[in-house]
Image (cartoon, rainbow, N blue to C red; front, side, top):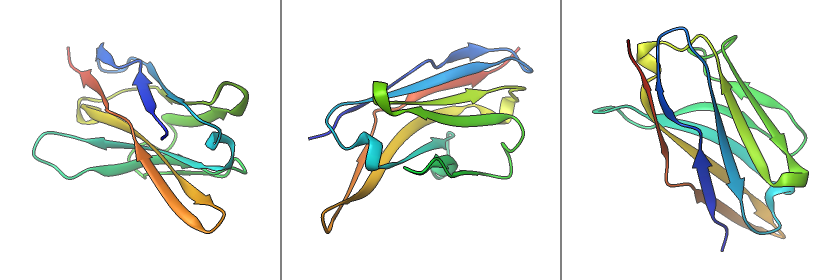
Length: 119
């Protein structure tokens, strides 16, 4: 069983920065696609960014140019650097790990970390 533990959330003023971390247990991190998702109150969970095992990245239009996803396979950890934060970025941010091992798909979620952007 893989466990994902997010950290780095908190309260920040508009225009500020935060870096989220997602630490994974087990030995499948390097072959997995990692995603960051977020869910604001009263809204559906939405994709923020993904990074593949080959380091290909994808971003939601709303965060392009402000957020950067990265990974360190040696540490089994993924990151989301968030700059120029806006109040609308306020949400619970979730880490997601997915892929296939042999022919079987897998997907895991973290417990989430709260990000609040407010003055």
